[in-house]
Amino acid sequence: MERTNRLQDIRTLSRDELNDVVAELGQPAFRAKQLAEWLFAKNVSSFDEMTNVPKKLRDQLAERFCFNVPTEVAKQVSRDGSRKYLLEFSDGTSVETVGMPSRNKLSVCVSTQAGCAMGCAFCATGFNGLSRSLTAREIVDQVIHVANDFDERVTSVVFMGQGEPFANFDETVKALRILNDPDGMAIGARHLTVSTCGVIPGIRRFAELPEQFTLAISLHSAIQSTRNKLMPGIKKYTLPRLHEAIQQYVEKTGRRPSYEYAMIDGINDTNPEMEALISFCEGTLCHVNLIQLNDTPGSLMKPSPMKKVESLQKRLSIHGVETTIRNSRGNDIDAACGQLKQKHVNL
Image 1 (spheres, helix red, strand yellow):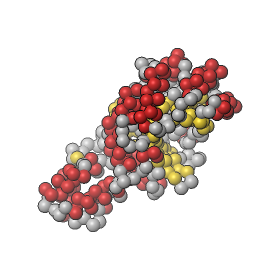
Image 2 (cartoon, helix red, strand yellow):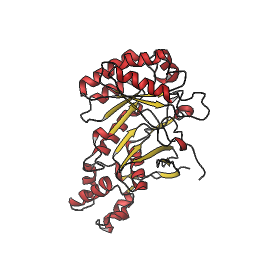
Image 3 (cartoon, helix red, strand yellow):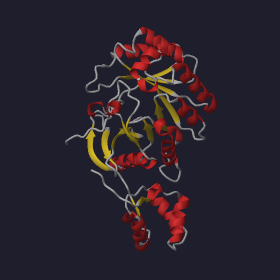
Image 4 (spheres, helix red, strand yellow):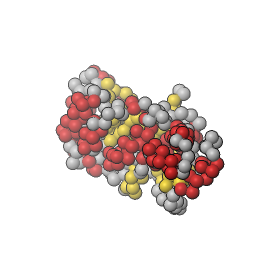
């Protein structure tokens, strides 16, 4: 159901715009600093929470601005402590986001789009296509929602939820900078990871950013014909061009990209596939994350046996390729990679 609000979300104002509003209302300049602290460091969701701001000013602001925070439609809690949320924005669009606690740390997996146009064969998100891209504020609000629900500081964010971040490049970068802002959530740049299917123009633009954000590439096969079947939405970004773009990224930034490789029984875990992956990675700066495919309802694809995953890890390591077998979080509540699809759950 759509919740319309014609007022502008005050959190979309820059600090300069906040200064202008405060001056326009005849308030001393230090009020803008107070407001900025409430909005961007303490992440309040109402004017009433701004206890050191005069009520008259709060009322004036409430006449002109709003807090367009998402509504939690559903929440599921995994056996491993992860929590998946279905969040609805003011226009009725909904996305899923996941909070993953671990040893006094809290990681959040955010969506950058509602749905996805990439059409990857193993991913539930793309089954219904793309609804729309999210704004930077909507991306950040997912992080804030998780932080508030856990009552903990978020220490890292992965842009690996619904959508292709580089198909929403500008808003994704805005969100990264809001999360990284030392006067805001102050999450270190290297703890902010963007995962792309391999959108080459986005990789090139990402390499030009001054911040040390982390790059991950969903690879899933180093054989072109297999990759085309698994990831039809990016056929035009061929593996040789992708390899070249990633090496240019490494030369430009000096940072180590990671490859996500979801192992699918009988499809990308064969000996030729393993040889191709080793050839793609050997001699380059990279880290490979091996993941057993997460089961998706309606999909005929099944995860590779763990012995094959372990075999590939050993083979990559022998060739000097840094490799980790990644355990998926929230599998039992369809919160793992490739399982997010705006599902309403009756709790």
